[in-house]
Image 1 (cartoon, chains in turn purple, cyan):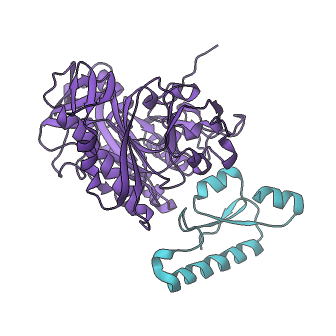
Image 2: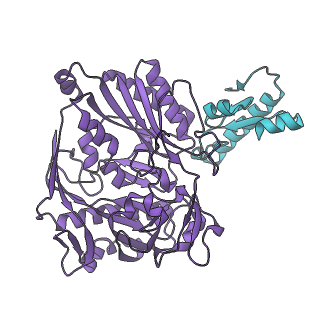
Image 3: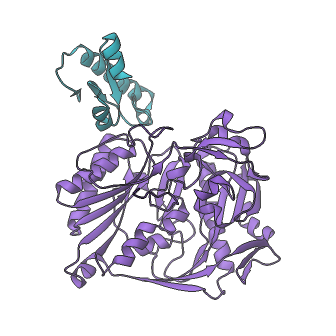
Length: 428
Length: 78
């Protein structure tokens, strides 16, 4: 499978008569872009705003972030099951507006959404403080149930991501990156001496607006399966998650998964990358057990010597994490996990809700409960008072001058468990 | 809280919760597995009558568990 990512670098975003990219500036025809979503009768109101890196702007509450992408050459189209059909993606050519993002925002869908500050202390923690953002702000029609609202906003974001890329499809690429790799059988035969590594991409799949989608399929109803890493880059996995913002994988994260990139870059050098196993976090114990047995079995059948396991969220998924590690280790497959910690505001509590002796290699993505002081922003896109309902915030978080004192978990992407964050550690 | 009630007040406690491994990790002594995280003590997918049966069965199992002498952490699966 060979995929070329044609990256066009976006350094700025501005309104314009025609949606296009010129000399690094993405011009957006506001009316045309809005017409893509205004036909949806589930929205009473919809508007677009721009937010650039360094501006004194707060976006709240943020539901999802989407990197604009479209296929230049198929088969298929990006975001299969939503924008594209069901053709297998991951081959051909895909245009990427690198440095741009579509951000979806609206009055609270559920209690767990997040915020982005384009400058100030929080901007260190979120990758979306550094992207040129086109923000969709909607208001649902009265009486619309939350699940319909979430679906409408999810699809609107994906459509707008495709729309922006599609209007720039003739722009010359600043960089072309080629991702080419066969399936696990061929690649294992090609590099017989190297350790074979699989990647479990654990995803929140718990219903009640905590869901992830694979080719449009609601993942809470699947057993774990195998995809080629290229499929992720074309939007095979989509976030439908209204969950604690710090460690949810937005659709943007799935497209730019650093674990995929790292394993790819080392493939054929010091390891064989077997593929991605999108896996679930069930709400029932039997579901967690079934899933972990399936994951370990899949890894074994693929001939894996080791597995990288990333978590999404915290709390009960810590049990999935433990079970996945334990089942694999018992089969002789070595594991390393990437997770954040809910260690309390003083950092002294146990980081994970569960533990197992087989979990011996742990990469921490930070403490979600760390308190952070946010300076006021000159402009708020969305609804500042939403902080009262966000995980990591409270009614008293927002002060009269617009400053806030919150837990890190309200900042979107701040402790991302794919490792896409600024938080690190060093020996001293 | 489960452990503290037992330790400080000497009242036996049975915990109904879905993710049994976490209960074992945190040190609950009498554990009755719940149905699912969003609805640990019932199953709304079975309709009002079915849900009521599940609730009753869980409660009765919990009452049995609380009267059962134990020497170590015990999961009451039936």
